[in-house]
Length: 172
Image (cartoon, rainbow, N blue to C red; front, side, top):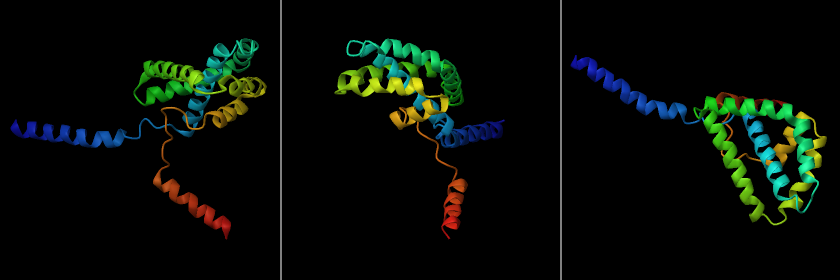
């Protein structure tokens, strides 16, 4: 019985040591998830601008409505990808809800910290409304850059080693 307890303790200890390393990169995002996070952040940037800049530009609430009407399907797909990310990383739907709240709150602070906030964001509405789904994702990526709180996963070492070799062959 003591041997069994010793084995169990050793197993648990091994899990405690190995599990953190195995899950260390679990919160990173795939390329699709990074694009989804950029779009989600861009979405809230437009939402906050529509609410906070309507005094400077009374057309923004109407433009927000047009954007939502035009890209509702894209944002629905986006929400599914983001929910998948938060489920995969163990944060669940509640984690996704918190993430959305944090993004919105941060953007609300940026309104007051960024000089010319409304002038910077107002032109984005027309670009977003005119864009199709893939163009909207590209616009979001250009506007947001690295998304808040989600880092891209590192490429597997084998894949990273293959790419330079391919480039080297092309150069020859």
